[in-house]
Image (tube, rainbow, N blue to C red):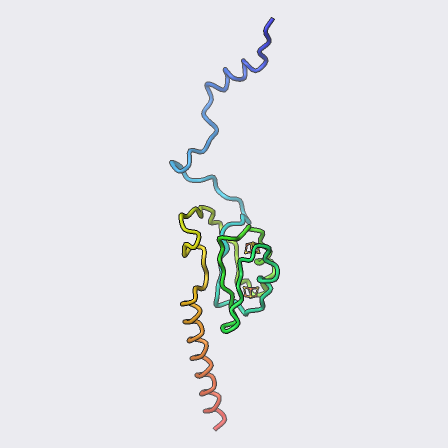
Length: 141
Ligand code: SF4
Ligand code: SF4
C-alpha cells in the first residue's frame, strides 16, 4: 500500500493564502528595533579620536589628520556596529536603511567626506581659528 502522509497537509495548504511578501510590489518586511542598517556619520560631532579606525574590522575608515575627522567608504561595511559602540561622541549611528544595491561601488551614497568636502571643512576650521585669534587679541588689548 502506498503511504502519502503529507497529502492532507498539501491539500489544506492549497486553499490558504501564500505566506510570502511580494516585494517590490509591497513594502518590505519592517525592520526590528536596533536593526543594523547603513552607517550614518555626523562629521560635526566627530572629535577625531580614531577609535572607529582602530575597531573597524573592514577598513571602512580613513583618518584625515589635517582636519581631525574621518572619511568613510561604507561599501566595505559588515554592519558589526563596533564603531557605533566605541564612538565617544555619538558621531556614528546605524540607520534602518538596507536597500543599498548599486551599479557603482563608489556611489556617493557609500561615501562620507569626499576630498572636496574635506577641503571645505579645512577652510571653515581655519576661518574659525582666525576669528578666535582675532577675538582673543581684541580682548587682550
Ligand atoms: S559597522 Fe563594523 S564594519 Fe561597519 S563601519 Fe562600523 S566597525 Fe566598520
Ligand atoms: S570614534 Fe567617533 S569621534 Fe572618534 S574619530 Fe571615529 S567618528 Fe570621530
